[in-house]
Length: 306
Image (cartoon, rainbow, N blue to C red):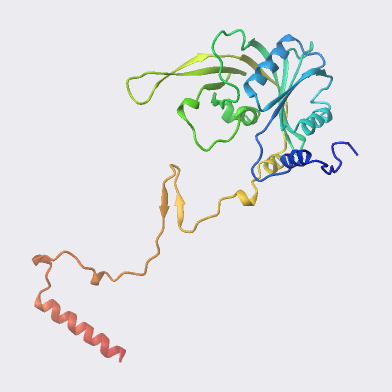
């Protein structure tokens, strides 16, 4: 049995807290990412991993030593590192003659590889090459996806889901305008993916809503899609399953439309409209002849009942 698979009984309070953090929970912890260098990673790939690590801090782990592994052939080492560092996302960088400047981005489910996509770096501008002020560590980015491929093609659709998982950061209930500090923009065009990072500048506009300007912050990457290893539809559906305790309970007679407007249905007894009090007008007054016929009808109904 593997050392990481054994049942470990904590001997100290610190070890107990550590194991409790890793236990399955209804509300997941923030997904951490591990950034791994391959055995033959060059300077470009190494710098890309460092820049992504800077964007992902403090929810990332950077492995500085080279690891000789091939994710599409053998995934055991990635699964080992995932369990060791408690990371459900990974980025693996390598370089060779057949696939130069190679990045593999993927995610785990139950410490096993769920899906991964291989990307080739065609052009790269580092964070340090663009001389602008950077965002503070741990800032939650805004994600923008442009291009029809992200909605049409299955590989691009899964890549979009993977990138959202990788860069989304912690889930928040409230948003402050000053906290919207930088944007990650992904464009799919002519078989390439353009990754750009911008800092958000809030300028005076003369009214309550500020004028927004974008300033390129880096890194900047031109990527091309290579190999893919996608999970089956059944496994993907299982990984997205929500626990029963978190599912909102259905409330009777309440519905919502696409704009979030709440509608309620009220059940009432059948109303007798003849007894409805209307506005008194001379023109609506009953004539003596009508009253006599109504009284006769009521008397005949009573006789029939008796």
